Image (cartoon, rainbow, N blue to C red; front, side):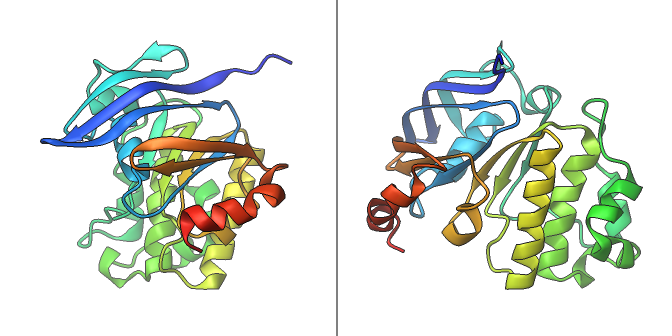
Length: 235
């Protein structure tokens, strides 16, 4: 069966001002695949996601989305190729209700989830639909941040530390969500510090250090790599 490559990153360099943070990053993600970027804080994982979206100071190299080169594109045009980015800071508008937050983003492509489908996936959000953003718990805000992307029709999801600081019961719900989305054919790139959360979910793991990819391995290879991983990640 032919595999369609959704994302291909080649020799990606990135800067914030004078600070050179990405040093020739290379990786790819196939359609329907879940890939996790692992590494210590400051390794360049979040900067890689931001560079894919054109949200970094400057960048050079090649980033292709379904074969289309995006290096010359503005962020909104990149998003319209079917990419949804969920940043670590979530970006919930505190003065709006949960449902108003949900309805904010534009439709990027056909096939986005309906509000009803989202409420089925996240029953908490149905219960809190009229609550102000400030009144949502951290876990509810995280669910809302992901749900907003799903409504747009994006098929490639870039998820930055979605499990960070959340109660185990919420982390478990997010794991179930990733599993469900994968089953529905979404392509997902996750940046995760919580290795326990990421380990059972990903098809492949990419390890970053000092703005470079230093290792890549599959789910099947994970048991044999655990010792080295603990050294890299300090866990």
